[in-house]
Length: 290
Image 1 (spheres, rainbow, N blue to C red):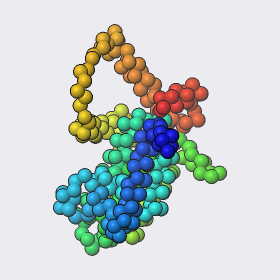
Image 2 (cartoon, helix red, strand yellow):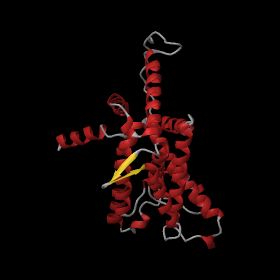
Image 3 (cartoon, one colour):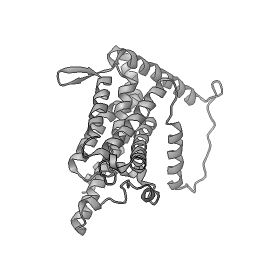
Image 4 (cartoon, rainbow, N blue to C red):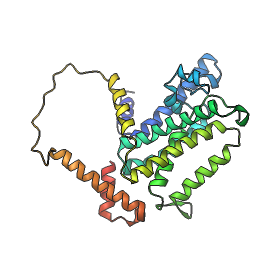
């Protein structure tokens, strides 16, 4: 048993950021299922503390739900589909972009999806809307990543069975499907999808112009997590920094050069596709993603 526990811990250590998010989503789903089994509470009421409520004043009593709803799934198929798509998107994201930036896109997508859901259901006349309950699911964050990739590298090709299609075709298909869904029973969910898609598109188009709109969000999340991190009572010993290069130490200088090289490679991908890269560029990109 000890050996099995150690193996599990070791595997968890080597998960990338999105694989950890997938593990958390699965864990939350199982917690909801256990609550149902041992308390006989209806399944739809087991994760109410994570749901994003529709009425704005109910949201004010649980503001954390603008993010936590993205970790709540009631249906097994809903969970499996979202996590399946997230897993395959994450394989591209972690190889092409820094983890913190990828996480910013994902969580900003969830935030934007929840915000649009609240806005529509509290501003638009109810006669024009299909009745909806609280919002749950990671779809807005998944959509943000999908549309981001499709907008950032629109001409990159992907294979769908025997058919080769460009990423912008996939992005267009996603938007059309979600638009049609606005007239179905899951209108609230599709509205959240659009919130994530809009965020992903804006993030990609601004990043291509050299503007990272997620920097402020990343700093906010860093500040929030630092509040919960315990401070070490041990005295910090500062080592002498290495000789500076143009006002920066050697590590910072190398990091800057590597990031510029990554940006040039990504720009090449967006214009000519992944297959236009040399073997050296592919190897460098893979190593940087690791």
